[in-house]
Length: 310
Image 1 (cartoon, one colour):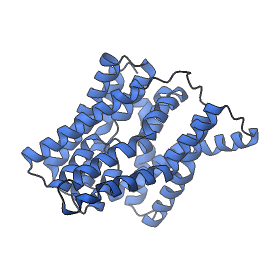
Image 2 (cartoon, one colour; image 1 turned 30 degrees about the horizontal axis):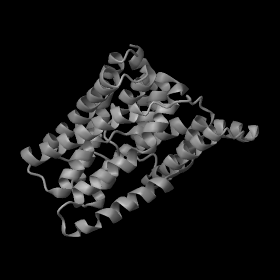
Image 3 (cartoon, one colour; image 1 turned 60 degrees about the vertical axis):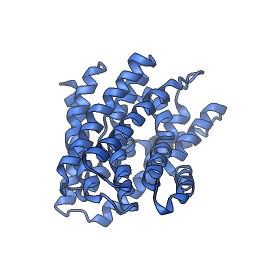
Image 4 (cartoon, helix red, strand yellow; image 1 turned 120 degrees about the vertical axis):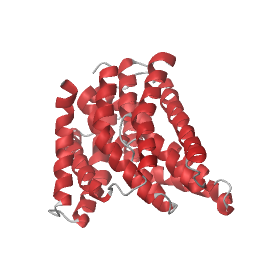
């Protein structure tokens, strides 16, 4: 009951926004404007403030990244193999399928849910995971999608482009900048901190509104069998492996392990759809997987939240 009550405001806000977009109370242009200000301003301010003022431990447990991304890698490869042997997918299709299985929506949903369930102490493990999230997963997806294609010689250029995108991205950039301020012990102007804290309060509801309204674009469009496989891998297998590695293999701090498991429970990231558009492949599959996993993620989050003792 506690998990349901905790998730209810999150689901309610996103649903309200979805209904508003569905009934055309807000236009797609207005939704995109909300997305732009949220992900270029509100969330970066919140992440900078959170990491700059967080109580960082002297010795960060880097095993968190090994545990989390080892699970990501295994699920990614498993997704590729399933697509190759069962669905007979082509090269770019393999990249999209594997990414769908292993790419959780850590920013729009992961941050608010982790902070709601675990509190601000989760900022440090969130920072460690999210900072390199897009770089690793998008780079690997690019390599898979480009492998053995005539333009395969451009893999390094694509990966470099991803790296530059991550560096310039306001979300990853704000995390790195906030961590630097924290590490060097820089004292920020108090009214500035108060302003950032005030802006931060708008970040989570704005992100949930943007997610809900934006979901109007990602409808179930067919390819149900493949989308169900992706959804199952993403919502059940990935968090199970993250739980296994963080609790039984690497013995991560319980709070950090809980953060990693919750982040891995999130539905398929919207960036998978962006990736599919880039390669003009599997757009319907990506959209269907996002829609299905968003609907069913409430179940997986509840299951794993109970497993990790929340």
